[in-house]
Length: 220
Image 1 (spheres, helix red, strand yellow):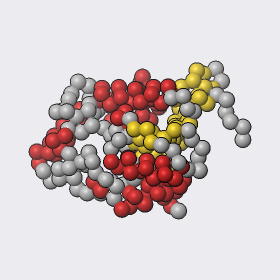
Image 2: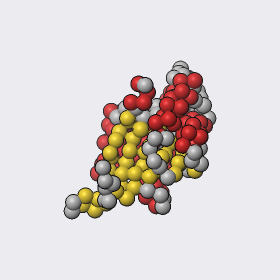
Image 3: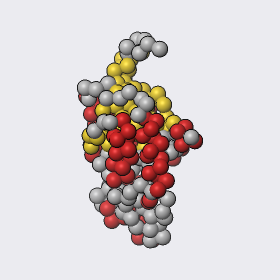
Image 4: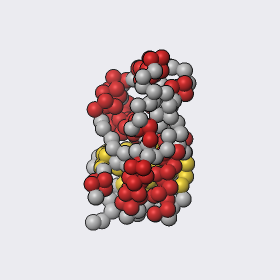
């Protein structure tokens, strides 16, 4: 198959492997490491993604993404470039690692969740709707400006769905549609999502969704 000359950029996004806090009854701590299952998942995705020719490996600097990216780095013999643009949605630090059963923490969580899907609301030092959409735009521009054509990015579930929502809905994205997208779009640990930046007949180049949440490697 001949390469498509209209494709300017191909980005393979990988959600990190399962973390300890993904399966614990707590609000995930910032530094939660991969679980034993997550480490196995990281090895599976590293073996799979190493078969894809790519030019640069970028990762969120959080521990669970670092560990996942390290497996890819060692298997594919590519150094890791860390970028804060690809961290998970920033939660209020006061709830990090706290149990679901803590009543006060639960209320802060619910208020923060609402701030992510409404305009003008902010809870403590947590990210809100305007901030996470602005960061998604900066992340997409950052990727477009990379000189390399094919990239692998290790990131997080909520933020990756934010990128996809922004690409699919563009300037028509609203807090309400964003809330619904986050609700109905599932994503597996180490699932692969691919965005391309390309043109089409009588269409200017733009970001396009090519593959979403491919996790066939986990069935091996």
